[in-house]
Image (cartoon, rainbow over all chains, first blue to last red; front, side, top):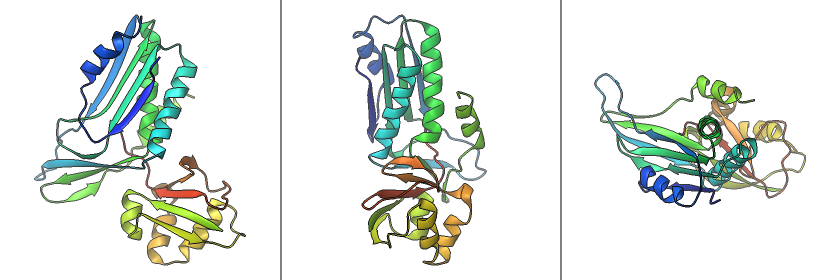
Length: 151
Length: 85
């Protein structure tokens, strides 16, 4: 088992990461999640950049903790989590998760669990920078609700 | 006792600094008491702490509640609700 978390500014390639990890395990399934910077309708504003601030140290701790929670809850072969910070362009990946398991159900459930917990427990904050202004993204109540469903 | 304070995102912008070390009386034993002390610093501090929905806290890099105890040399952080992923 490799089990790693990565907090980085650089781009990542989740497909090649998945292919590399696959060679290390005799897994029956992998499920991955990838989140991207999305352009959206802001009227006359055009999203130019997403700036992600984080809490160095606590971020890694929080991701490792989420990973441990998932490993304790399901039988998993491996969990890989990568999350970027800094300035990100539209279309670029923000977060990547890959879960390997013997069976699909564990892999699906664990991947879903990890992104739900990451949304509320990993200290990242998004600032949207448009051609006219910049503002902090508000936290969504639904993110707390989705996480609480796992209790 | 000395405590390290860290601020992130909107909270950092409102207070105008990202970190500081403060020396507080040892009768400050919980996060709630630390917040009451910080609110005496002025209106921007009150603005942050008057709305419980607008901020979250961590002690030594773990999410914490207002009733949690603080000790000398702890690292305490204040920040808005998380918006990663």
